[in-house]
Length: 314
Image (cartoon, rainbow, N blue to C red; front, side, top):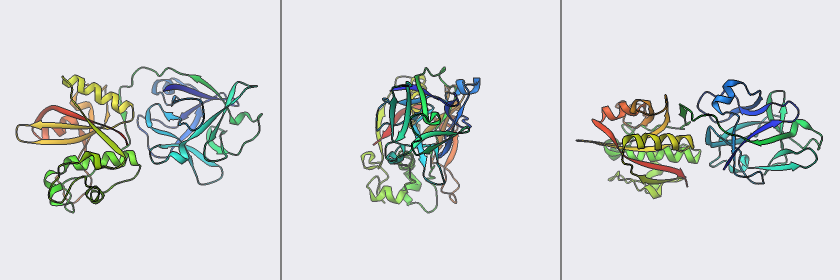
């Protein structure tokens, strides 16, 4: 995978994620902008692209789960970013080299529409001809700035295992299943339910032991490391790559699972790892807690990470 910048031939401004503040949301707008110090520092103008060919994705460097997308409403259709998983039809693009100028057109693979600037906004329009510089882009390799000190993935849901409407086995033992459902929803681009997890055999009404391989959209793999600092580094690298991490902790009397989805201040301590914690004593809400890993450990009388479960798109 290589990193690139896209500079528009008409405006000499760079394709970037608008209003980037460390996390992405579905349908976050894309714009063109000058390379000020903020943009250069946050890498919102850098795109991860496997090759400058056809049928590829222009992934956001800051979260490679997201890519350029066509929002198919209005006239013209807007360009934004959206999770690629489950959205392949609208995210796939062709890079078409224009020999005379040394620039590229960027065309949607599945629609006859081209990446076009309109002022500082970016949209998708029909081909305007080989001299339409609003549709032509200089594409150059790029080197991201220093490793970010914070990163947050946009998670679609955070299930509460203690929710009163859950199966009793989930209320008592279902933290792992809730985490699996949250991660599957992230990769699937849809909010799966615990009932669907049960229907697919991830758990049963009498046993909350998680059958990892039955989960939709996501794959899971155990990952053991020798030190807590190694765990911190692995969590950061996975989040930087757009992959949430399930964290398994064990205490004297309890065991528990949470989903690490972000980090702050370098992510070098429990306090600086952000997690979805399915253990929420408020049984009236289906939503779990958004807390630090330090808080999740303390509340379960645990002192350290015991194992990671790495995740990826299935």
